[in-house]
Amino acid sequence: MQERNSQTGAGRRAASGDGDYANIVSRIKDWGRELGFASIGIACADVAAAAPWLLRWLALGRHGEMDYMAKHASLRAAPERLLPGTLTVISARLPYWPDAADAEQVLADSELAYVSRYALGRDYHKTVRQRLQKLADRVALEVAALEPAAGAFSYRAFSDSAPVMETEFARQSGIAWRGKHTLSLTRGGSWHFLGEIYTNLPLPADAPIAEHCGDCRRCLDACPTGAIVAPYEVDARLCISYLTIELHGAIPLPLRPLIGNRIYGCDDCQLCCPWNRFGQLGDADFAGRNGLDATPLAELFAWSEEQFNTRLAGSPIRRIGHQRWLRNIAVALGNAVSSPAVIAALATRQNDSSALIREHVAWALARHAGQGM
Image (cartoon, rainbow, N blue to C red; front, side):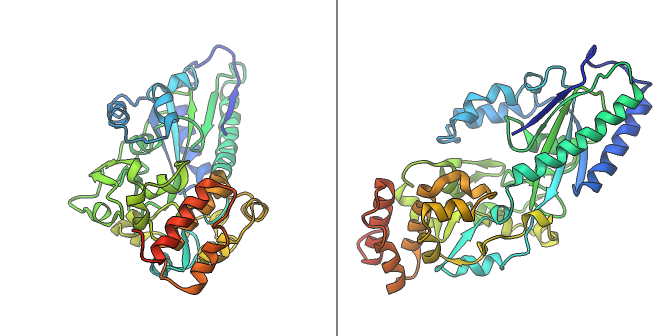
C-alpha cells in the first residue's frame, strides 16, 4: 500500500544550499497542483506534541477492535522507524466531493441506502498513492540533477496505508487543521483525502495552520450516536463509520436504531459543518459508481456475493466483504418505514448461512413486528 525508493549513497547530504531546497519545495507544490492535489505542504517529521493524545485515546479503549492502532502506535510516534533518516514530510490534500444525489435527501428517505460520500467512487488508496508516486518521481529527478553523484533522495509514500499521523502533518504543513470532529478541515471544507511522502531531504517546513472552528459545536450535536464525546475527541466504539466498516461482529443493540439508513460510513459531522458550504466538486476519480448515491436498500440486499465483488471492484467498500455488507443493510431495513417490500426483502435472508446475518435480520423483522427496539 505504499511505495519506497532509495537512491542510496551516503544518505542525506547537503545539496548546493538551502536555496536549492526552497526551490524544490516551490516545484513540488507546482507539480502537486498539476497532479490534481488541492494543496501541498511541508512539515518536520516530529509528532512529539500529538503522540500523547494518541496514547491517551488508546488507553481509554476508544479504538475499539482496531487492534492495529495500538499495535503500531510506536510507529506513528516515530516516523524514522518507517523510513530511516526521515527529516521532513510532504503532505498532500486531494478533494473528493462527488457529483451525486443530495446527501440530506438520501438520509431522509429510509428506503434508500446511504453510503459515505468518500466511498462512492474509486478506491482513494490507489488514486492518492499513484499520484504521490508520480510526485516523488519528479522530486527524484530534481534531486538527481542537483546531486548527480550523491543520489541521496529516499522516500516512502503513504495513502492511509501505514501508521502515519496524517492529520497532524497536515496541520503542521499548513494545509488543514484538525476539526472538532477530528477530521482534517479547511476553509473549503473537509471533503478531501490526505497523503504523505516521508523523505530524508531537509526541505524547509511551512508554517502550521491555526484551527478555525471557534465556538461552533455543530458536529458534536449532529453526531447520531454521540461519538464525538468532546471537542477533538471521538470514541470509535460509538461511531457509525466504525460500526459499519471496522467492526467485524454484531452491531451493539442500543446503537442499531441510531444508524438509520447508513450502510457504509457516516457523514453527518461533515454535512453540518459550516465550512463545507464552500466545498466544490472533487476529483473525477471519485464520481459515484453503480448508482450507490441513492439506491433502494432492498435492491442492494438482494446482491449475491458475486454481484457484490463484481459491482464493487475498485471500490473501498469491498474491504468489508459481503457478510458485513448484508449485516449493515439488514440494520438499515430494520430502521426503514415498515412496508410489505421491506419485510419481504428481509425474509429472503431469514435462513442465511451466516449466523451474523440471521441475527441482524431477526432483529430487523422484530422491529417491524413491534417486538424490538
